[in-house]
Length: 162
Image (cartoon, rainbow, N blue to C red; front, side):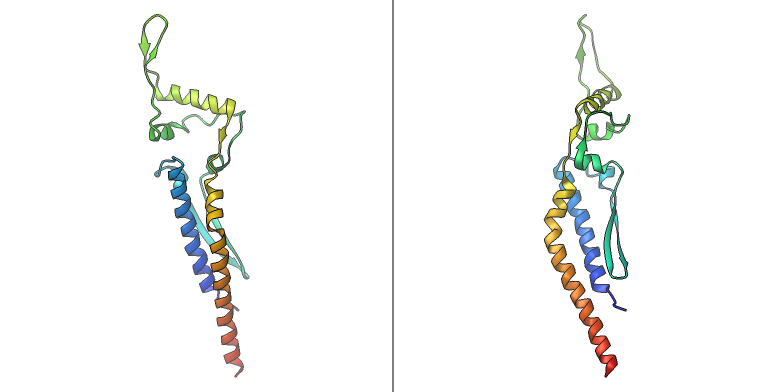
């Protein structure tokens, strides 16, 4: 049986690089570096010479990545942390009778959620950009590691035949 140690090591290195690059791209796109979206983990799996990198992300990453079409509001409370990070804060509202009041964060969040429900949002496509940036070098390096693992296997088999 072939020992795929080099290949698995390369895949683990790339999975970590992908995770770090994705995080950088999200920060550049204006996401909070401490946000749950940054909490991704990965597993490199091997099954009879079939390899996969499996990434585990929060459920809502797909809306951050692809956007959200109109028709449904995000869940209540889901935008508060984002609003605080972006410094989207309520401002004084002047009423027609001359009085003014300061709406709550919850009220402001409702208005933003309602707008998203009506108009949708654009996606950031940071995962897609991350994949595109790293794909060619990943393929090249995995091919080289597989070749090295296979050559080591052949050498060992040939020595056993002597």
